[in-house]
Length: 333
Image (cartoon, rainbow, N blue to C red; front, top):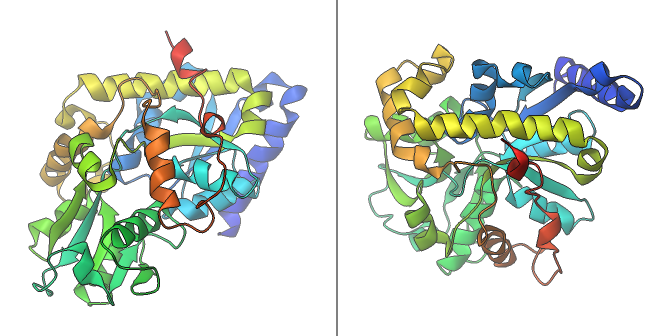
């Protein structure tokens, strides 16, 4: 955590705590995004670019953190009020005694792919990755969760492969080019960049609901806005405004072309290839929910996936009803 980022978050937390005495202060909210240039988390930056936060009277500060687990840690430390990251953290955290809930569910598929380096033509399945290094954004991240699940499902126990934290984008690509990782879990636009240069190929694709069901056994709610339940309960007006803004964005994504959406995004998100970015978005935007509502069968799939490999979750009682809320998204006009 860098000092300037922490100070920004701490200032926002102070403002939020002052909300009981000043309505203006209560509207200052800091949200940490687990890599806001990733297409899976596009709704965060797009909402800001469309002006929907301001329309709701919110002063929202988006902060960038390359790995979802690090964003989660900043929220737990009180530096930010919410995280745009994977819903599975809400399930995992409940087993550690922390109540966190998805307030707006952005997607019902992970938007992730297990890529394998073309330096290794012998690798044809997840089982072939026994003894290999697998790239993930961070240890304890959702990419790590999914990698561990897919390996255990393929009959490879934990301990017979190595998860290597390499981030996303340029750092992920460099790790694969240097053969520090032989395969890895990543998102767009990193996927398209490696496929375009023929440096990698897709081993497991979870960019659509259909392919996700094949890989994980059901709908897998992924990208979301999640926040501490205690904060949500004390700031229902702000939570409703956040839901209003994000659901409007999801509707925008659902009713506009990939090219129209891309035009709203910062140019540096294209990484020098706007056409590639548009194609990646067109191929993947079906992962986003149209209304921010948690898919009915999703939480149980997430629990089943985590229970398959995680010592934190396996055998534990989890009240899934406390890991998400539809109270706010269902009130959006």
